[in-house]
Image 1 (cartoon, one colour):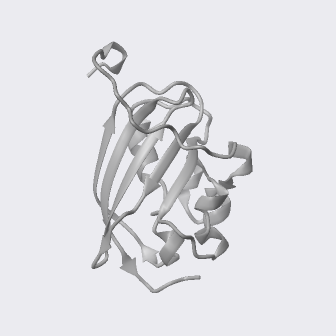
Image 2: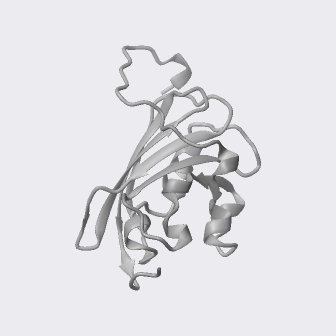
Image 3: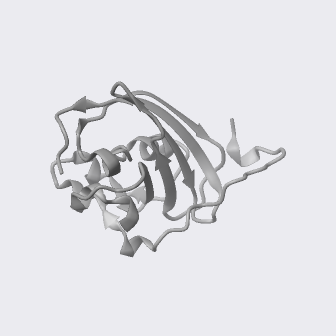
Length: 164
């Protein structure tokens, strides 16, 4: 579809997450280390309350709030939404620790609108982990506070035990 020409009723019950400014957040490249090639292409900054796992602490919730954008500074586009939706480690790291790899088995991203220029805000959460399978729901909001994409993924924990 041409999202620039999309018209119709709009109703959004949620608001963009309240978050610290990007420069007060934790850069994922610093938290995960240079071994992850993805961090050369994307700018991911977790809010301090979303990064308990990076401090080797146990968080209360399997949720992340994150600022994101392309590392080269290009403005977001609809195709990049798929990249943003799958770029984070799973939020359950906050409650289980870095238990191992968590490959995506299925990913669906619904792009709802053209994103405005600037960094995007994301809110991601895991509500269920059953027998090593997890689901993750995500929301991506643009710099103007518009919901531009929704995601859902199913993954599998390839456990090596807690890494606190």
